[in-house]
Image 1 (cartoon, rainbow, N blue to C red):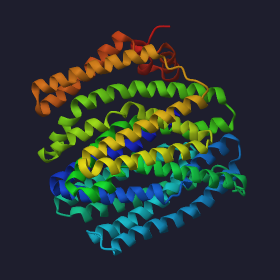
Image 2 (tube, rainbow, N blue to C red):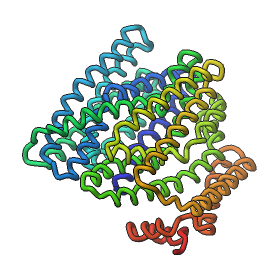
Image 3 (cartoon, helix red, strand yellow):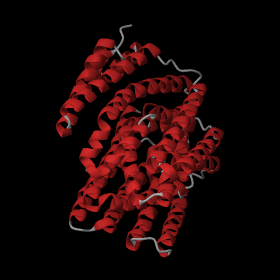
Length: 493
C-alpha cells in the first residue's frame, strides 16, 4: 500500500508541477489576462472529468478491489469490460457538450474545439485507469502519466515561446491526453486479462457498481464545487481574466503542496476495499489511525513553510503582476494540514461502501461553498473566492474526519507527539520567515527554505515528534535509513 501511495503521489505531483511550470511560462508569455483565459478553458476540461464520468470510475475502483479481496476475479474481469463500454458513451457526451460551447461562440474558438477532444479522451481514460487503481497496479500507470506530462510541459513552453498562444497550449494538452489513453489502456488490458482466463457475468457486482456510482457522482460534484475551483465560474462572470488568474495561481500552488500526502491518502482506498472484502477489520482500524497521524505529521511543517515563504515565492516566480496572489494564498493555506486526513477518511468511507454519508455531506458542503461564492465574490473577487473555498474545505474535512474515526471505532491520536510536531513546525516556519525578511529576493527564499528545513530537523529530534508506536512500525516496515530516522525523531517506548 505504501509503495502504491508513493507511485500515486508521483503520478499526481508530476502533472501538477508540470502545470505550474506551464503557468509560469504562460504568465510570462500571455500575461495575467491570457493566463486567466487559458486557465478557465483547462478548468472546463477538468470539470468534465468529474461530471461526465457519472461516478462510475470511483465505483468501479471500489468494486474491483472488493471483488479481488473476495476471490471473485472472473466477475471482476467481466465488470471492467462492461464499464469500458459505458466510458465510450460518457466520453461522447463530454466532447459534445464542449463542442456546443465552441459553437455558441466561445473564444478562442479553435482552442475550445481542441478542448472538446481533450475532454472526451480524458473521460474515456478514467475507466481503464480505475480498473488499474482497483487492482493496485500503480507503477505502469504512474510512469505513463509522468512521461506524458513532462513531455507536454516541455513542448508547451516551446510552443508558447514560438507564439502558439492559448490554442497551442490546448493542442499540446490533447496530445498528452491521447498518449495517456493509449498507455493506460494497454496496461489495463494486460492486468485485467490476468485476473481470470475468461470473464464471468458480473451480475451483483454490476448492480453494486451502478448503485455506488450515484453516490460517487455526488462526491464528484462536491469535488468539483469545493475542491476544483468552482469559483472560476463566478470570477469569470463577476470579475475579469486578470483576477481569475490571481486566484488560479494561488489555488494551484496550494494544490501542489497537498498532492503528495493527498495521493498517499487516496492510495489506501482500494486497499481498504480489499481488506473489507477479506473481513480484516482490525487491520483497517490500525492502518487508518496510523495514516491520520503520519499525514498530519507531514502536513504541519509543509503548511508552516508555505505560510512563511509562499507569497514572496509566487511573486518572484510569476512576476510583479502577480503580487495580488498573497492574500488568497494565505487564506487558502489555512485548512491545508487537514485536507490529507480528509482524503484518508474519504478513502475509508469509499472502501467500506458507505453510500449515504458522501451524499449528505456533499450536498451540505456544496451548498455552503456556492452560498459563500455568491455572497463574497461579486464584491471581493479573488479574496472572496479564497475565503469561500477555504471555509467549505475546512468544514468538509472536519465532518469527514469525524465520521471516518467513528467508522474505525476510534483512533489513537497520540496528542502529545502531535503537539510537539506543531511546535517544531511553528519554530521552523518562524526561522524561515526571519531569514527571508532579512535577505529578501530569491536568495532569501532559498536560504529561508534551507534554514527552515534545518530548524525542523533539529526540533524534530529534540522534541521527539513521532509517537513510539509509529516509530516502531516504520522501523519494522522499511528498515534502513527510514528506521534510523524513526529512531532519531521517535518517542522511546
